[in-house]
Image (cartoon, rainbow, N blue to C red; front, side):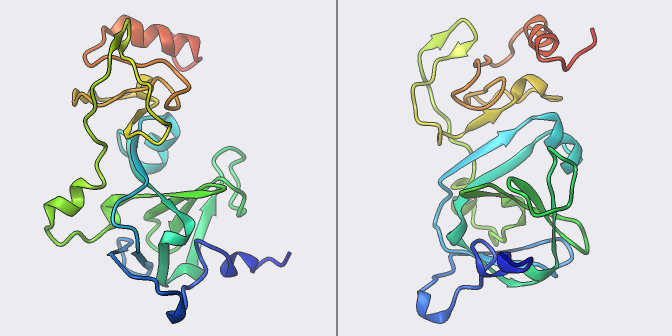
Length: 209
């Protein structure tokens, strides 16, 4: 497999006219050198991730990501100038899963997984269409309560907050909040007492208190 084979595979392969790729949305990085289209009307799922890696790499309290199939995106400019970062090994090799950014302005474009991409909706040009933007926001759901808050019995693709135990701001929006990965960790109730948060951080080695 050659070093440039990635250019011929989704999500980087350019869609040909006969593939009937219907652009539903357009987006770009901050400098505009990287532009892309999306064909799906709404993401498969969307999540807010509060893990410390996302906080550091995005320079923000959390990451807002929308999940798409790799074939749902079509780069119209600049995809040869994208750069990668594997946060687990701290390398810039194209090793999945990895972070994908513009090589010029360094805007985060997406996280590329083995089967899907997590695209950042803040790059999409909604042109003031509030209804389109809402399609990318995690949805409000209500489920029976447990000692930590709502009990979820929905598929892993549900819209939610992840790694909320590492949060730096409280977001009391009624959406499901997981201490780690969704459906694989405990749920946290809105306004959960601080001692529970600190206890989990100590258990996860995230706090020296």
